[in-house]
Length: 494
Image 1 (cartoon, one colour):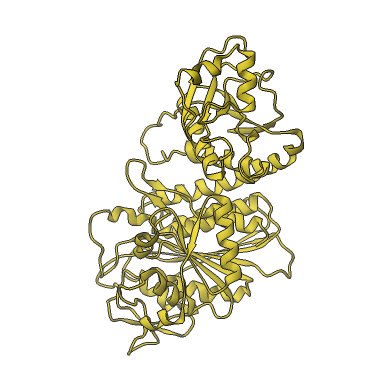
Image 2: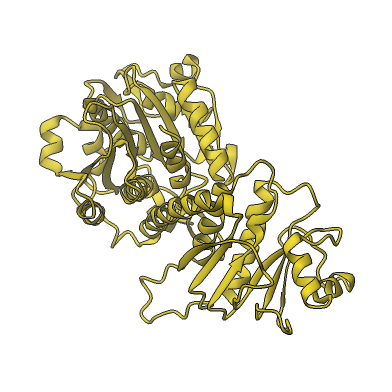
């Protein structure tokens, strides 16, 4: 799909389809007015007849455009005039992209970006348009035995903007294209079955990313390396599986040699049965998504390298399976983590924090400016926040604020939960330094409290994406979140 930037002039530009907005009270956008006048009232006729009311996300395709240079006109509802904000604009773009995906147009010009969208600038409107198209047109067909027919055949889309906004729009297209690629990678990895997307497979995908940039360096540790280092917590999780663990360290050096890196740590449980504390059978197939934190880290590294970001970035992925067997970890076992702290494992299904604690300890050797871990960590987060916002916990108000702002701007929102010291009291163990669970209360917070013990004084944030990494139902699949949030954070200067 090719995106171009066009200056306005809908009555003169030839295209298979012009995408224009109308408002809920029948008010036409300036572009719609121009096309209406040139066509002798084509658009005002359909609005007068109430064929389209202009409600947010409503669409109507006009197929007979007379002598207009556009062969079709896709009318898109924008809601009440003067009330269009970024959320409504995303909704309108999603509706337009869905309608285009069902049509047979080869090209289109999108005039929605000419509308006033709160305080959203041309850069953001272009980003939203491109990212929304990729989101709406994404299909996962890798595992199909025969090619699946793809809806529509759109090859190119022009984004209309003023001459003054052309540079900003081009930058938005560039950033959005890279981010969309990172999101697609994360979605692909999540959607792959666990017999394909194994720890070794994640290493192969990391190798493919590293080969594309001279600024990348990959180190993929094996089980023997982890034993030598003393990663007892991670090894405890994987010991019930026949598949060996891998520990991926992917470095991107885009900043100055002396600048401290941002370290991203992604939970990479390629299948989570719960271990001896086995999960219920229904929906256990969804536990292939327990590596979506890892997938998002790889997606961000790919996008950052593609954009040649001026930042030093380290992606760390502890990858393994959590399976029951005669060699699996038992509830009551005590292991020693890389940090030297001992952990009493009361529930083997609370395994994500075990692999992350060793990865967080390892991350400190890079002397990072910040550490951000991303994990499908707790079902409690899904209960608390649903599938709308990711959970955010942090030991740094500055970092938490930056991430919340990035998520808001990127349309990939998070919500901060508290991390008071009292929550850590729930993790006390009479037999070890800490237990891996703290009971039913505040499950998302106690999981983060556990992780906070392994970050030292480094500014750290934890993103719990258990509710946002994938969706269920007829359109089930990975979402690629929080790649947009993390990329926005990096683009804002980290």
